[in-house]
Image (cartoon, rainbow, N blue to C red; front, top):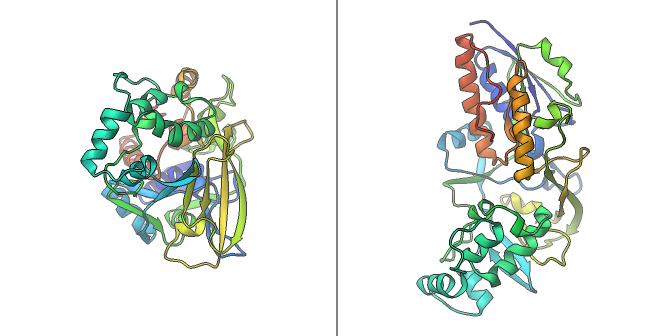
Length: 385
């Protein structure tokens, strides 16, 4: 097999996993990133003053049902148990999320059993006149009824997405669980945890291979491509083409960081459902590593807004206008030479970490087979539209 030279644009999970797969099969890999660190948005670092491991770009909690992916991340880091138990402050009270039996009983001042709560929500609260919910608002009204919707979903969603829930697709809410027991674990996956030494150390170990070279503080330019057999690009899809057709819509996040002597809120994540509160949530980062003990805290107030070209893109909006523009960029990508678009930004999709790693592993395997057969590599290895 001919040894190739491949460029990974972006030192996040996609570039690291694909690069490692190719390096382990004898190919020379260069991983470059415009930032001064690896690991992309899951970058973690210790705060100098408090010793707290901080999720610099907001909390990243690993959860998956994919046993191969779980084995993969544990190959490069020791994952310790972590359950995401979210609270929300709304209407002067603190409630448990996702909406569960405790939330329902507390909110309505009742002591219902599971079957009683199920009947109460489905028969007395849910708007059964909505047969086929089309929007987030309709889904919520059909799901939990007006009272719970207005308290826990409406205000938070307006702040998070910058538009009314009636303008968002129902699919966004369909991912959120509703439980008629006292289970307050936000996720329901088999494997849940946090890397003992942070995500950046995990990515560093993935990239630790003699055939991988990492270059930071280096923005990508398309003129770099001809120096390699192929480019794997995990930056913004529209950015690769110089935004020549316009900018795809994203939400970005602003963080107001502060320290606190002692415990600030007693949990990792506290949402704020009231529209009158400008931030969506406060995260207290020492609680993301419950096996550690720290006298002080590092906290983030989190604000969501529309992203400009100078901002870090977090959440792809993917509404009708954006999907139309995305289709045009996909057409450009299909005609591009020697480049594959990967990851959250390269495919303009919201991806959890486990899905990003799964796609990286699958892409690496397919690429290696095509290299062995001397076939032309694809611009995409997943369905983007």
